[in-house]
Image (cartoon, rainbow, N blue to C red):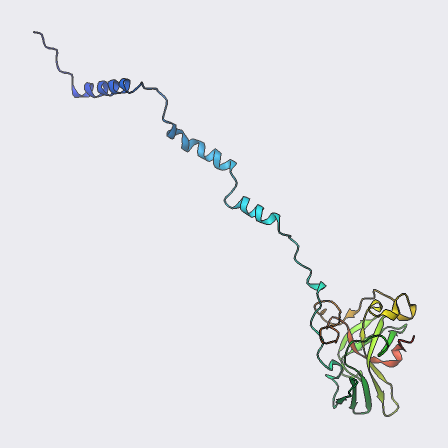
Length: 236
């Protein structure tokens, strides 16, 4: 009996692998699908949005990029008796009708510490030379608050009459004529839409009547010579 020489180990192993491959439904020369995944991944990543991008777009779709206008809301209300805060030596008493009667060196002062209303307050308009509101009278040492233009409608809240024959002063608040019913389409009340020129930073909010019945700090208010304005009552 002729015996064939034994195959070497190096030859047997490849042959066994080939036989196993044929028995397992055939072999192909293609690489496994999983081998191709890393090559395709960069292309897929390039097509996909960056992480969080779509979420941010979806969230922003219902959000306005414009912040609410803070200037459309009323600002803080002026403090009580703001007209008297810088007047030296002033003393005030309040009547049952709400009228403040004050005295200061050389002046008698009276008025209402609240917003003007039809029929119970004085009004006026700025004269042709314009006027500057100050935090006190007389003008020496006073701080300018705002400059008003000719025709600016005013609520005259306090008047200070000199006891020595000097010039009188008035504490006024610049307001829009349309805020007073009697001023509707009435040229006596001056011009609408006149913007003051603030001496310092513009106060926050809009000019309005606050919850306590006083004007907000966004309404220019201060002292000026009575000679600089034309005063009238709401009898017009």
